[in-house]
Length: 399
Image (cartoon, rainbow, N blue to C red):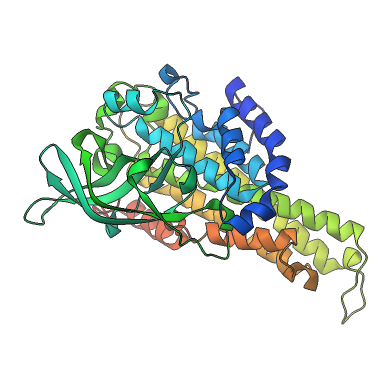
């Protein structure tokens, strides 16, 4: 991604990421065993000001556009992909606060611009009942809350129903992290250190002003936007949530390419069938070139998506739906390119790559896990764009 014209705040983020990457990388084995980041890692991200990238300047945040922030997330992923993933979601969850009424924003940022907010944004698995003054979650279980152990607050995706079970709205409720219980169910083969466990609750009342309506956010009518008129908060809602997940995969692929190249040049070895030295083999040269091109394509696509979203946010009104869908395709395509690049490097690294501590083993696991995220469903994104650009309205799509 183009870092030549970053703002001072974005350059500071990039510098912090470069400084922290090797520190976090040295903790990766321990964090993977614990299945969560250490408290010191989260504290260092906060102290470096990395969680306030998208927070309004009136609360001490940087109010940056995502195209300026993704390079720092990718850079951090070159040291620790789990830390980069958790950072990315923490950052965008703070951006979401700007959509709520101003009184709620004041409360959330009362202790500074870097609260730790986790989320399970998928609304299809949980119900909140509309009651006097707010909403009641009778029984809730919210999976995949990355970085959950360090939470101050949490966004909980819900379908809002009335007394007759009619659907009123779909969105996320902001609740105190203290009101939720942890379910230790994060036993996975990729991104193990993200601590993406489930959070649960019973008979939890949430005040009316804590609802982030997805429909209102997509339409640009959320109440908090009156207090935050800057273009950073006029950005297309779903494309931002999708693009936010692109940085870690890019950093993983960039580092995998470097690790493979260094290994190829420094370690003698030969293909057993042909006896040809790996470093001299035409197939290795071809594979390496193709992997680098895939990483370059991913970087360019993510940069383009970020620029398109930023430029559209400077205009009045909402981004056209087809264009919004195209930016999602840019992101999912880039993330698939990163996975294919890492996979090719992995398959051409010999038997040693099967050991758990091999850097390409972790890269392959983590970039594969990233591609499993619902927001990065490539086939869905491609189909949606194709239908919109050919005149299908797709009324149920949040775009």
